[in-house]
View 1 (cartoon, rainbow, N blue to C red):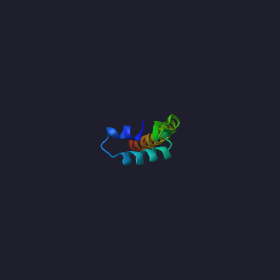
View 2 (cartoon, rainbow, N blue to C red; view 1 turned 180 degrees about the vertical axis):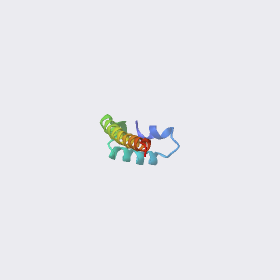
View 3 (cartoon, rainbow, N blue to C red; view 1 turned 120 degrees about the vertical axis):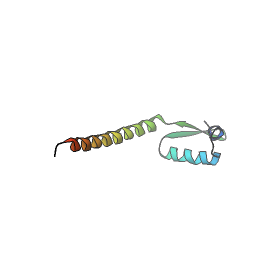
View 4 (cartoon, rainbow, N blue to C red; view 1 turned 90 degrees about the vertical axis):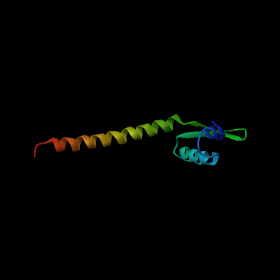
Length: 77
């Protein structure tokens, strides 16, 4: 979608949407292409997959650490 289309139903301005898209693009989560005078944005599946992998790793490690703490507290002293 173009910035104007994205901004139409949002409670923020078109420039704000454009700034957010720049951040998402620099993070590799969206791509854009020129269509006439507009830039059309779409989700980058590779970027989203990489983000998902990072989140899975993070939450896996966090849950393992939490499990270890709980198990240590359950051990008789």
